[in-house]
Image (cartoon, rainbow, N blue to C red; front, side, top):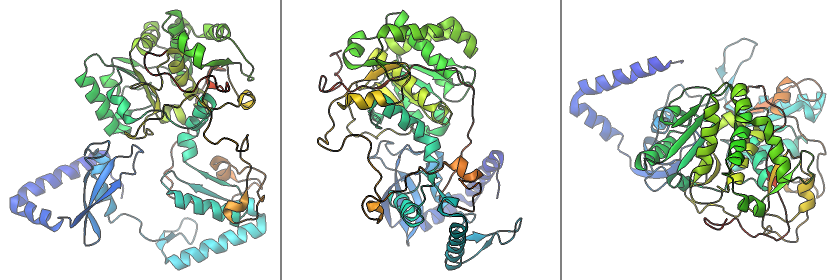
Length: 499
């Protein structure tokens, strides 16, 4: 059943009216019928924010839900979380396998035994006819670890194909690539608690108000409690998030890379950078991984002066100046972004440029500071501040780089282990040690069009929530930061006041 937003609001209003007509007695009877026997802790699985929930259970059925007051959301749930129970118990949910026996025919329910037998037969026939690379699996970030492990084992160890992909590639592969090329590890170094310490928020590629309402509420509360807090929102659209912004930069879509390079130019031109930090904790690299200097990086940014960026982004020149100054002059700056940065053909570069701004100013790994993908903080756990990492200079230089900075790091805990990327080993999947399929699997987009043999016969989707993939114009090679490995010179990122 399809329902528009207007229909939903009308339905909600009618329900409220009927509840009022029923009077207190009717409401009391309904409440008594759904009084939980116990409350079970859980986590909302909608947007990735990880809000804690308490699920009310009666007769083995979920009948009520409320926010967990002992989690980072402090008992608050957004509308999506509050409606989990009606969604869970909706009669429109698919609770059994469905099959379309003829092309264009209607879906009809079948038993699990019939469904599994049918799938097994189709996969067996496809593999026997076209080979193992004619099948693929497409998963989801909502899969549990055990589910993803099992799917990998079936396809890689059982079918002997590496055609395994999922929508997390679209959501977070750019962030993973950005963190790895900049810091040497895929690990955000902040927590949700940093929101309560930040004095400036730089929000780009995220409509936080609608995508992550609980986080937006915390940001808005921070601004309300501290009048001096500033919010920069870089978004081509005017959204609910931009309504609370002190500076809304409505740049031309696809030009945000130039915008961030322009902000970096302003920071250097206005001498708002922190040379004591990056001279001690960062190194510069060229596009091919060779050593560079600060002067090389500064010369690179001359292509992104505010007047040039303003014309390219179709924004007032003053906004470029103001954004750079607000970012650098704040005691604690926190950057937040989401799919507007990640889901794109230059997502890794976009992530790198956010990190550039923090490394140039030294606003990183301090309370209230740091670059953070919007829904992927680690709640209010002790944050990771061990940014400065390994001691493998040769490997750093072999990485694919672009013109920019590089951050040094402390030695890894795993001393004495084999250096370099791990070798594929099929033993974990039940094969003899040393077994592996040498070639990489195809991506989802290629799998849909047909992997290798030019056709796709078997393609399994598991809990997939497809998202749009939009390619946009980009502007040339961009400066970025990559992890630097300088043996043991520095053991940790300095605390506030050390740099």
